[in-house]
Amino acid sequence: MTLRVGLTGGIACGKSRVLRRLSAAGFSTLDLDLVAHEVMAPGTPAHHDVVEAFGPAVLAADGSVDRRRLGERVFADPAARARLNAIVHPRVREEEARRVAALGDREGGVVVTDAALLVEAGVHLRFDRLVVVYCRADQQVRRLMERDGLDEAAARARVDAQMPVEEKRRFAHLEVDASSSLADTDRAADALAAELRALAARGRPPRVALPLERRAGVIAAGSARGPRGLEPARILAEIAAAGGLEMERIARRLVPPTDRPWYRAALPGTEDPGPETLAAAVVLWALARAGPDAEFLASAAASLARLTDTEPPRIAGACLFALTLHDALVAEAIGSERPRNPSRWTDLARRWGGAPPPAHLADAALDLAAAAAAAPPAPPSVMEALQALDRLSP
Image (spheres, one colour):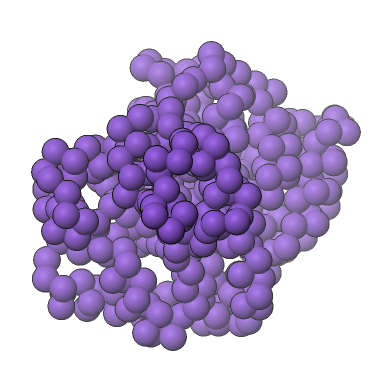
């Protein structure tokens, strides 16, 4: 299976240079910024909608969208930025899917997709691995001034309008430090290419077959409630409907509702029940998506936990719960013994959560795996969601 890699980072961090280096290394690459420019070309539906939303003042003399003028509008106005995203993002995703499908699926292949807002849009989990390119904020401002001819105030406004790159790094599987010389950045990109090539060569593990009723029992035996009005069964249904875990989609179901970005939606204080109650839905998606991939599962569990919680130990606890539950279900599916060391995922959970996880959550995950065998029948909606997940392409 082709390894799908998301490449992101802050504005003027050096993503484009890293993308070019990865392309030179032989990987298939896709720049979604260029795709966005193409889908807004004169005569396209997106071009019409942009002009209707922002007026003819955003057009250049040749009738194309003047991206600098449009940028001045949307970077100064979050509501305008949201309108633009609603117009452009769905069309970009459709074109991305078409181009990736055209590349085909091949063993050991790597496709790298470059986009600045993968995390902000909550779609970073569409990729097997997420790479974040980073540098200091003051370097971003200076580079943006040099690249786009902006004054310092305008450049800083654009940097400040984005998610801080240090915050974005929490979601990275891999990183490229682009804060030093261009030669150093190239060396870091080459090292990344070698790591991705080795990862792709190992191949994606095959799906683990666990009976439908057994998987449904995990939801039926677990907590019916989760934090902020979220429910594990509803999370599972949303994942199935979207074809993956999309954070903005889940954020729209928070109680109370939020008008903040999904990664800033968590409220102060601790929610009861905790974020680990939602982890079972992520595990069932991971089982349907591919074979065991602890790094991906931990990143997905951490992302969902951050939607409702700000406490690192609780986020790490959700990761530990997910990893241990997945371990137990895989062991059952292949006829192996119950995991002997439920704390073996502590270090990985700590890395993704930012603190040591509560150890008792590993035991709680094993208890859920055992209870699922005798759980009552799950609601039809759960069965339908699991069947939909089984139909997804691996």
